[in-house]
Image (cartoon, rainbow over all chains, first blue to last red; front, top):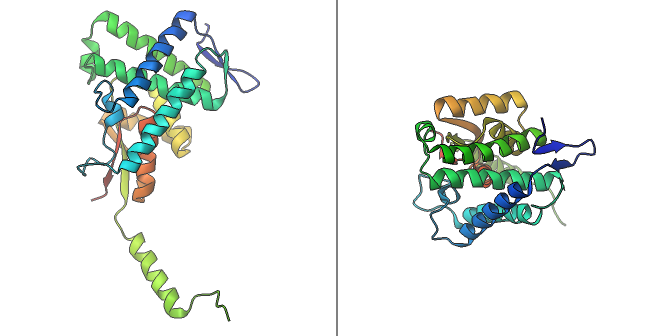
Length: 143
Length: 100
């Protein structure tokens, strides 16, 4: 069975995505990037989650560090979205970004629990499973 | 003449400070369950961030999955915050809390 991501003998990770798959990821990575620069956006609550919930506000340097890490990953994933092979740093950036795509889907469709996912519209779960399969496949290649 | 070593009183003061730091209550890094993130992904992220062996990373992931949360690391606050930032950057739900 062909896999979307496969580790080659030379250490690189081969990307076997259709043009439609790459187009989808490019669009979603761009959406995350836009969300990052809009601090008032509520599209991806995971990007605004508190580091220390016992405080009213997190240390701004830490939240800046998090924003920087996320934006570096998404930017790296965007500039390599058409590549046939990824090195490890690029593959990790893809993994982090695909993880955010999943969280974005969950937030958009109010999927907060297993029951929510089980009760979701079949088209939504099909999208969810497709992205989960990509992340699962990439995780296996990264091991 | 330059003195490059600590006097006894300075040494004692340094030791006292170190003990004070060492007795501060540690901070936990907590990872929370979510219904969409694949289990294998959580395992590889734990291995990458904390350098845990596969067995430990898998055990922690299963704890998150079955109990809703798991303490994945404990120690100094600054490092706990740094780990939490990394977990967030990998799209995992995480927070820090001080040990009771």
